[in-house]
View 1: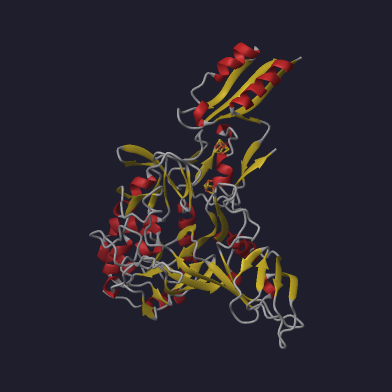
View 2: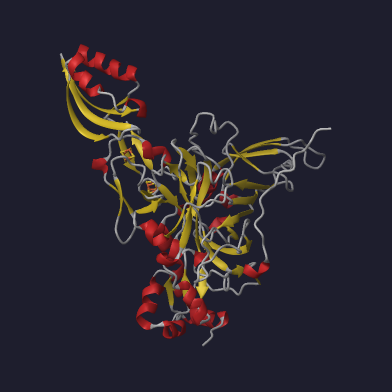
Amino acid sequence: MLKTIAEINDKIKKGEAVVVTAEEIIDITKKKGLAKVAEEVDVVTTGTFGPMCSSGAYFNIGHTKPKIKLGGGRVYLNDVPAYTGLAAVDIFLGATALPDDDPRNKIYPGEFRYGGGHVIEELVAGKDVRLTATAYGTDCYPKRKLESWVNLKDINEAVLFNVRNAYQNYNVAVNLSNRILYTYMGVLKPDLGNANYSSAGQLSPLLNDPFYKTIGIGTRIFLGGGIGYVAWHGTQHNPNVLRGDNGVPRRPAGTLAVIGDLKQMKPQWLVGTSFLGYGCTITVGIGVPIPILSEEILRYTLVTDADIFAPVVDYSEGYPQRKPDILAEVSYAELKSGSIKVQGKEVPTASLSSYPKAIEIANILKDWIKRGEFFLTEPVAPLPGVESGIIFKALEERPILEL
Amino acid sequence: MTVSKRIVLHFPPRIVDQPIVYRLVKDFDLQFNILKASVTPGREGILVMELTGGQRNYDQGIKYLTDTGVKIQALSQDVVRNEARCTHCGACITLCPTNAFSLEPGTRRVLFDHAKCVVCELCIKACPPRAMELYF
Ligand code: SF4
Ligand code: SF4
């Protein structure tokens, strides 16, 4: 029995599509069996809500009178610098950008209260944001200075464009040293004091489609509370990692680059985030629908937390020094039990990605599809898979010698 | 004049093992009533206590504590969770020394038991969306 995306969309239009979340599908299939469920269920929805640093947004803020060429100049939004190496009034704001006068880690650990991610959240919340800019002035763009309030509804384009989101699996971070560490995986207490992980596990988009059989370029998704698309594979996309018998990567693997209209997104799904001693970022909500086109695709969505394994990595030495050492492999079921065993020690666990919010996203997407507000798309090209031969490269430095 | 105040003491790891509270009694004639304690050798210790004694002795006792490196806060501060900002990630759970946070079984929502909080402030800056707020 094979279904097509067109057939599923027909059912969505008629309000007849059967949609369940990646959590619900597990029990449903246990009760009814693979063949029956593959026939009955049309879409499985996934979700994830976690800090995703390689995120940002580009804007076309509109022309001033007289005109100003921001390209090559300096632009700040609420004192957070935006990238200006584009045309006259196009700018890009990254989630990890910090105000020039933020003390960063000079007073260690830095607080990082406000950065690009917070500006994006405030814009999406409809708040006015202070734009300040200086330019060098040209014959066609004479204005050199700009200070103005801007609001998302008044600017031309506002597009969220995240070059790496939705990591397919991730490290569990621990600290073997005897001092506290402040990392992008949160505060790590000394001597294996805690273990932090960040994945929605059995609800996570790419863990439900481990070989990218349905998720590809052009896949329509839930992004930040609005509608977005998979634009490309994300940076550091690395399909060629160790995988379990079920095909699920046991290491950080695939990633997605995603894009969508910021104007229809919601602040509760794009949350400015601060990591003590590390920096600012944004917590992004993503939900991806998986069309149940075959039994094989259904089988992948049945993955449970007990079947997904993540590597435990030391962030005092192993991670910063790029050592390949892995202290242990643990399942998400173990991680969610509240503690794991590492080097014979019971280590309490905590998550950085929110499981309750991931469920909420999968349910919202489910409702959209059931109500006929969200249709599935056929990918226009697949994401690079295991056969792509992608090799994850590190930078082997070549010192620049002064002559 | 007798004073009685509720205070939070933060002990840096190097002095956790020293008999500091004992000296408060012996040298400064203060009475104490421990409300909450979280002390592990080699780690920062936290002690919430009610300290009672003559004003002069009390002030000298506090000075003695500060001199030894203990950080003192009044317990008039309060930590509140901004429910609208909390994403229920769980990053705070393993950081809180008094286990004020717990996971609701099933939903995996993060519960905050305000009564257990000793206002150590550890979670304030460690909460990624900064949902934990300190009030004076
Ligand atoms: S760390 Fe902050 S956002 Fe996360 S559960 Fe705790 S209070 Fe909520
Ligand atoms: S301030 Fe935060 S970490 Fe400290 S006791 Fe209260 S809830 Fe726990």
